[in-house]
Image 1 (cartoon, one colour):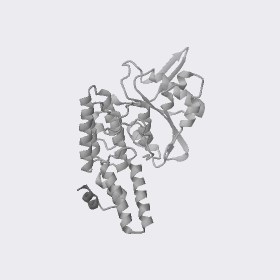
Image 2 (cartoon, rainbow, N blue to C red):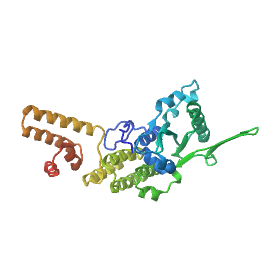
Image 3 (cartoon, helix red, strand yellow):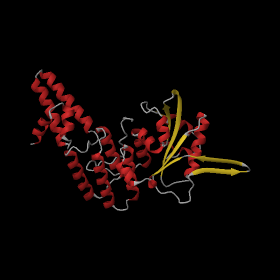
Length: 325
């Protein structure tokens, strides 16, 4: 599982900054795939997942794909083409054997099958390799739209079939009970697509939060998953948002979820560094302890849960709880 930092641009932080919110659909899926790439394989391409060397990170070919699209044709150069993925995936049977994967998150838009074939032609023309292709269909498509590309002219026929991950066709109960972290975000994305009212979205957000709290995934993954869920189930109603934040903080105090707003981790590290430097200058154990306590006090003010503070400041959990009284 990839553990790279996710791109926090356009991520909604309920209860945080009140800047105008704009949902970047392509950016959302690109960040999600970058963080949970192999779990996506397990969901959408299980055969390839079985052959992949999941201990080795895939190589993202963003620059190479940009070069492929570097033409004078404005229809090719325009977004969302630059948001798509081309990757090289290592397989278990040798480092020299790679698989190219083309992923596309597509909602409403132009002919998906034609676009997928267009990308396939560009990739093959550049690499002389046939890509494994995956289209992530996040929104409703025209009912009669084909799930593959075909063309026949004067006895020449081309048929191009690719993998489709269509959210509307996934089972809610299966996603909600899955131990695959990508499935919880897919569930939230599916809920977001069918939510017509803010109250519906609020209820889905609470349920997703509860499901996350029940999972035994590691702390960093749960934190990032929460950011993704809040990003796609963004609440516009301020009263409902306030209720949600209160519920989230309750679960955080109970230790069921981990929530750290943007910049808090970096701020905590800087506060701790300053505290430790102060202790070194004074040359006293008391100085070091006071520096750590200062870290804890600042984090408590930010609403960070006591167990995270204890770990960050290397202090007993009981000491943190004393500071809360």
